[in-house]
Every structure is written in structure tokens, then in C-alpha cells.
Amino acid sequence: MKKRFKREWQMHLMLLPGVLLVLVFSYIPLYGLVIAFQDYNPGRGFSSPWVGLSHFRYLFSQPNFVRTIWNSLYIAIFKILGGLLASVTFALLLNEIGNRFLKRLFQTLIYIPNFLSWVILAGVMTDLLAGDGLVNRLLESLGLGAVNFLGSPAVFPWTMILSDIWKGFGFGTVVYLAALTGIDPELYEAARIDGAGRMSQTRYVTLPMLAPTVILMLVLSLGNVMNAGFDQIFNLYSPAVYESGDIIDTFVYRMGVIDAQYGPATAVGMFKSVVSTIFISVSYLLAYKFADYRIF
Image (cartoon, rainbow, N blue to C red):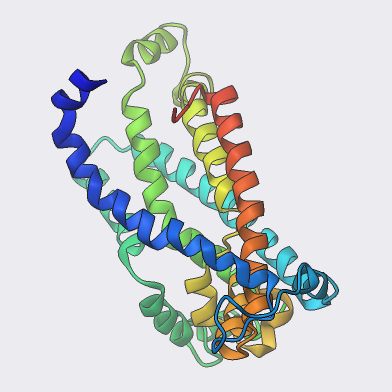
């Protein structure tokens, strides 16, 4: 260990800033979880009266909280599955483009939205999806009625899901394109000799070789199944769509920051963290079992 540290001390030094950031902003604040078990008063700090599990009992007796759990799972799962499907599909399509200039052009175009903040995109979407916006004018010109994309409880979740897929699938496409370049060309030559066409090559060579990467990306995304996208939904939702669009993070924001219910808000955050930790642990076990991926 001593010799290895002397040989690699520069790498450890490079890791130090990241380790300090995680320590200061992730591990030290864990002590604040005691607020979930207190009737927290900012004036008294951590010496506030101890109330045990009463905040958790209060939360699970609230229909609104149970509804936010369902909304978070519903939106997050469809975002994960939709993003996976879109990324794999576009990676396969781009892989079939022979012209390198066009391939890089399309790859860049679909990757650009990934760099844009939801603060910016929310303003753009609000204008495009308004009652008199471009999208509704187009629908009306086709003989279809206008849709209240951001004000209808039935439509709002799918607006969030589809817009998030559009914004983020470019990153996944790049990952799968990189995986496609690692497929041995001799496999395609053997398939052509056996008389396989382009579709058969995709079905019997490309997809099976891409499957480990797809499984790995899917199981690793399980850790985000409780994160339905606070920045996106917070910038686009309204009280009219709380029924179907309110997620755990927005619920915590209103309860803790706006209503100053620090104890219940911390209890919600703790509940989410525990569930997310379970999902992350399960995802790494599945990644090791099905994709032979491990961290340690």
C-alpha cells in the first residue's frame, strides 16, 4: 500500500477536491436528518423537542403525499423507458448513415438540447404549448382541437415525459453509438455471407451485441426512479395540475421552503433517500448479475 500510494499520490491529490466537496455538501449535512424526528424550531436549532416518528405517521396519513409518490414513480419510470427506447432507436438509425458529415450533424443536433437548462426550455415550452401557441395553432389547422398541455391533469404528465425524452435522449444516443463502434465488423461479414440483409444483421448481430450496454444503462437508472425531474416540473407546473404533476421534490419544496414545515419536509426527504438507496443497491446487484458490471 505504501509503495502504491507513493506511485499514485498525484492521482489521489486530484481526487481530493471532489472528496472534500462530497464531504462538505453530502456527508456533514446528514446530521440534519434529526430534524425529521423533531418539532424543529429555527430559534432552538437541533435542541428542538423530540417527536419521534410522528412526522412520518402524519405524512402517510395524507392522501396528497401518497399521490406524490405515485406521480413520481409514474413519471420517472416512463421517462427512463422512453429515453432508453428513443436513444437505442436513434443510435441504430445514425449507425446506418454512411455519410460522416450527415452523421455528425444529426448527432450534434439531437445532443444540443441536453446542454440547455430547464429554466430556458420552460420559457420556450410555455410559449409553444400555450392556447394560442404554435403547437395548438398547428393542431387547429389540421382540424384537431387545441390541447391544454400545461393545464390539464391528464395531459401534463405526458407533456413532462415526452419533453424530457426529447431533451435527454441525445446523451444516451452517444453512449449507444460508442457501443456500436465496438462491435466486431467480422460478425457483419459472416452474417452477409450467410445471406442476412440489413434488418437481419440488426436483429441477429447488432441488438444482441448491444444488449449488455442496454441492460447496464437500464439497471443503473433505477437509482433515479424517485427523481422525476424537479427542475423541469417546478418550472412548468401549476396548482391546476397538482393532482397528476406534483412529485416528491416539489412537495418537499412547498412544505419546507414555502410553508416552513421543516420537520415533515425533512421526513419526506429522508423517506425518499432511503428508498433511492434501496433502488441503487438493487440496481448495482442487477448490473453485476446481468451485465457483469461492478464498482468495487
